[in-house]
Length: 503
Image (cartoon, rainbow, N blue to C red; front, side):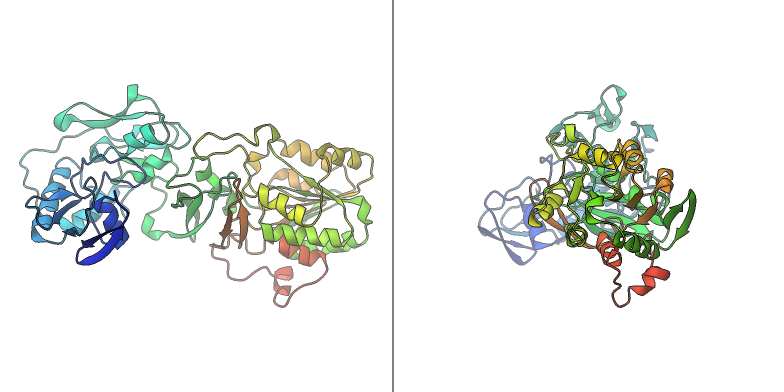
């Protein structure tokens, strides 16, 4: 390890580390646009100027490696004047339209302007105007005149997605970011370029102008869109959920996430949710509290023989829920457990970056739980045969949260609904479910604590960040109610729903 001093603070870094990495380790602020820890070094923005003791010239921190005993600072008047002049050049053609810019509140240019700028521009020339609101396909909008040519997006598509859509075209003050032959940016990692754009030149169509960022709260969790389990941050306020962005995890997803995973919040938001429990009696559908429906199911289960019941599990719940749910039915003597695999032909697909064909966050956790309980799942087709022959009279399904990943949902539901009694637990709504005998709304991944085990066997904890459907149950809650027991304080859920809903 090498010792160096950052703004008077002694830090140890690995040999080969750059000065900007030392600043990050020392948790000292340093201005930068083009440097990103997940990309190669470009050294084009010239904002990360530092002063090194014994060196008469300022250096850029992103492309200068630390030497033993270096004493570095970026707090001197000399450095501040340099950054201020550099910022002035970045602002020559950038419109200061922060009040209407979608990036306001999380814009590097805006932040540094407040820190170093706040001065009258010295330029007599008019700003060079460039194309605005350039459509780059289904996901991204480009505002060329906001771009400061940091080249992060171009390096991302060259080094990470390897799709090479972005480039810098023309020369001098007519240089501008664009895509090759105006092609759309439709790769499955495109929205990472929006995340890393420091100035609002690239914005997401999905999030654009829907909310100001300072009205949003956030919490960390794990994406439930596939078996990679990318670490993400979910943004929300009292009006709903608005977006997810990746959180760095060296062992799982690095700095990135895929665009498919960006949509997981939509399936947890209220518009997509089954809010009330349902019962269907002689084709008369009525609504009730989830807890009350679960107690009714409890009475039904107690009247059934164990060998006439079957349990269907999807890989979209937590390890803790599986343990409680499986243990309950095992204790009742049920032996018919089935694993509903949504896309068996693509289950092991992998795009080489992050996205996997298994669109469930916890397939491994389910398999491990069943193995720990000594349960061997039955062949999938056997379930339908047993339902049609009436060997199975009651089917209890822990259905998927993200229904679009289950293209056979309607056909599976229709075949299972031939049983005398179908109990369907799910977070998501679907008109189809009204045909089931009982529907119990369950909590989404944003509303509960638990563990997901990803494709590599990495266990990751998720924590409740927000309550969207207050009376929805976890599988653990449902298991407890199926047993006919209610814990202290749980009675309110049976008749009133959980208190403290935040949406």
